Length: 252
Image 1 (cartoon, rainbow, N blue to C red):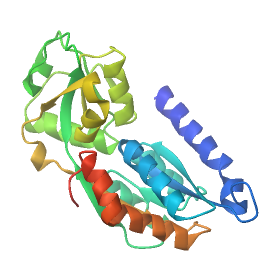
Image 2: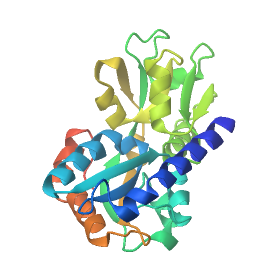
Image 3: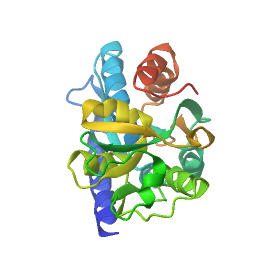
Image 4: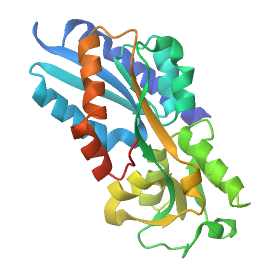
């Protein structure tokens, strides 16, 4: 709980520090900054799309705050200085309805996988191995979309082993694996793709019945509504879809 609280405080501080940039520009009278709040599982793809957006819009800088969807949705409803919100589930997006300036659009899907460190020290071969007392596994907190789906798969597949920790978001779960602090973890397929040879991915039975859906929306508090919508259009358009699908995301 202390770790989660500290993470939220850091996110709040980071967003607050962006307020002058959003209101006044990124470094000159003709410069503009837009801020995108996005689920941590979107870090790689949105960073790439941010660079593409800047290349298409001279004088515009895209700033990102990547975190748990629930944390960012709360920030949005509290009026954080941001222009766009992208979450890893529709339920969390619905909780931020009061901050939405438009109708959310679904732009991608994802599924969870079981991942192990590349050397797989605990010799994990399948999802049911999480029941072994010798296997230390981690997952997201159930308030985060990755944790909610993870718990649904655990219940669905009758896994009774308890995780040794629950992390604030999927990137924190992945870090536990790559740093050798866990034998296995529940992460998105896209995280397995992004990690390359650092981890080994194992399909989870029934994962297709627990698909993660990603919506995106412009925010009421945006000072640059046209640019905010243009970023949404980039994500949902041909270029955005190509980048997302290359990273392992499924079609909307």
